[in-house]
Length: 445
Image 1 (spheres, one colour):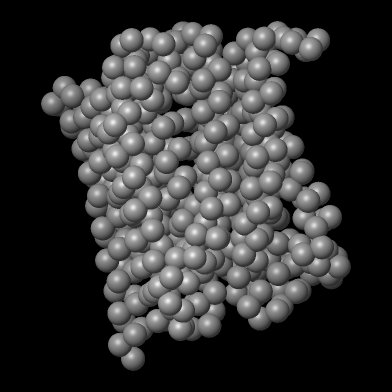
Image 2 (cartoon, helix red, strand yellow):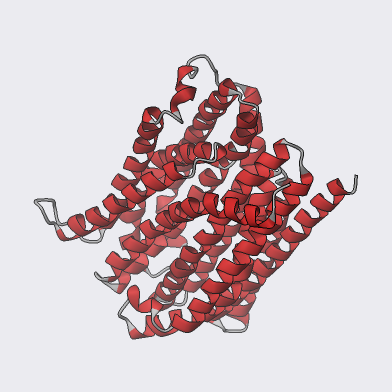
């Protein structure tokens, strides 16, 4: 049995590259928001709006890819090379097919943006931005399958390398394409959309190339032609992946709809909401990285049927995320007046975003708790109950409270954020109850 110190050490060693990788994803969006904010309020609001709608379906694809990790972990524990290759091939097939379907849904939904109760000048700017973003679905699906496969092997550095390179490329291209430097066309705010698409395309193709050239990862390609796409592996991936995808979708959809509610109160409110959400999403990635590390570690102990270590590893991850996210909450409280100035120079936007960060500080603990326990339950391949919990938390509690507080009680965007806080408290505590129930049930015998 591992000591408490060993559990913390192994969790941190797995988590820190995952955290940096996750932070890399949000930095892409944050960089776009910062560059767009330098152009104007309407352009910044358009980018936030377009990203919110795009993310609504993107997270379904991301969640689907998360099934790869626990299944590859189990195959790796058995030294099953063909099993790992089959899971990788089937996951690529499933996720690429899904990304095509999601692309078509997003493509044909573009004319509907004008009906989402947003300022019409924002919608006019957001539509072409959105139409470029959706083309990045396919390379992103490849990136996430590769990332989740590597995490199943406890290799968390490959995703970090590609993420860092992709973000450097995105920052450079934003600067060049928006301003038209080095002989490139001056594209204004649309340069940010194209920079993001090019960077994400590099990340998908670059990750495949990295896997093919890395000795510790390319063994599956020696048997890749031998394994086939089949219903057995597709079914295993779909069972976990669909539930994970719905968990992601329920949460993100609630935040997107909350953003639409905020947007109905004007450009300043949607900008303030978007800025506060970007900052909160940045720290959320710390919790997400710890949750992904928990999935890997719990998956290993689950494959060994070692429930004592499942309990110990899970509780270690929970304690770690509460310490980290508690620290983030304190930073929000101390710097709430200053952090929004990174994104905007508009006084009204900064003041409102500062107020929202006070609420965000309170839900840091529960946001970290829920994403970590979801990772633990995914490692146990226990996903159905947690999917139901996220549905109730985000679509019943969050959306109901957000609407009532924002419109009935006239709290506007402040009411929206109080509703989101209440939902995170419910989801975090209920998921914790589920994990506690499972380990107590198995340790009883």
